[in-house]
Each structure stands twice: as structure tokens, then as C-alpha cells.
Image 1 (cartoon, rainbow, N blue to C red):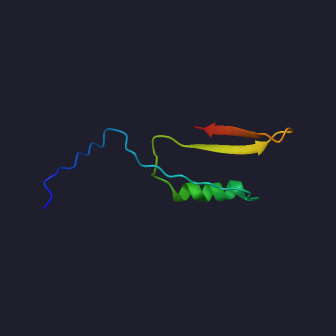
Image 2 (cartoon, rainbow, N blue to C red):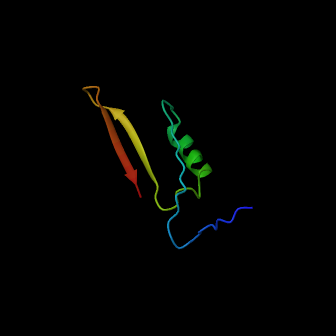
Image 3 (cartoon, helix red, strand yellow):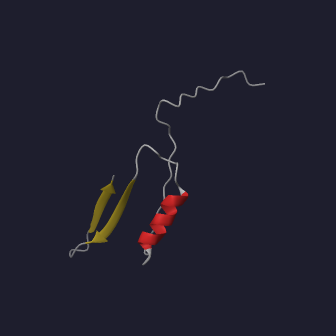
Amino acid sequence: MCEKKLNYNPDKPTCNCGIFGIMGSENAAVSTYYGLHSLQHRGQEAAGIVTSSFNSANKPIFNIHKD
């Protein structure tokens, strides 16, 4: 039998998260919507989306969209 007690305090942030990624999809916006919907209730403290593209010098550009 385990004698260790679990410490659970719902008043503090928790360490639950979900990661979702899409690469090379023409329907990235729709797929992202459904992917994030599937991950709901994970990482409730924060959420964000990063998109990327390439500039004229073929260097990657990353755009952070955060609420």
C-alpha cells in the first residue's frame, strides 16, 4: 500500500498542456480550428498560434498570434 499523500490545490495553475501542429496543408486554418477544439481544457492558462512563411531571401519568418 502506498503511504504517500497527493497534494492537489485547484487554486494554483496546473501543468497540463496540449500541442498541435500542421505543416504544408492548404486547409491549415480549418485543421487548426478542429485540432485546438480537440485539445480543449488542456493548457487553460494560455494559448497561442505561431505561423511561418519565407521572405524573399528564403529565410523563415515566424508570426506569433496570442490572446
